[in-house]
Amino acid sequence: MIERLAHDLRTAFPEMKGFSPRNLKYVRAFVEAWPEAEFVQQAAAQLLCFHLCTLLDKLKTREERDWYLACAVEHSWSRNILEMQIETR
Image 1 (cartoon, one colour):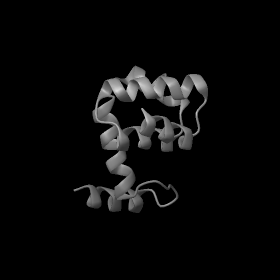
Image 2: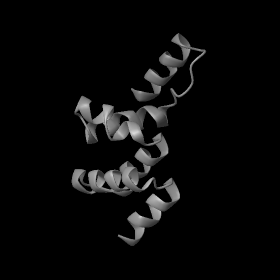
Image 3: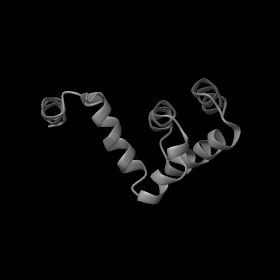
Image 4: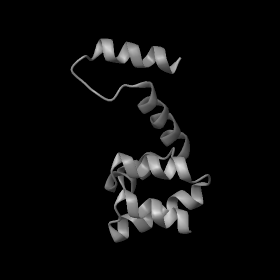
């Protein structure tokens, strides 16, 4: 279904980018991980997409993701630093 949706979105909006199946899977994972709209408008909006993908890929619980997200925002971590911090716990 995601592959079909990606195709339909690319066809409907050919001038826009980011509708790959991979990106749509990340969008779905993001919404499942953080369903609250106010979250998107606050902390998550302060990080790049790559940071959020790292949080989704490397951490399993909401509590862990929220903690590392807050630290990344507070300390202006790059994605590489975020990954290192997660790996070293």
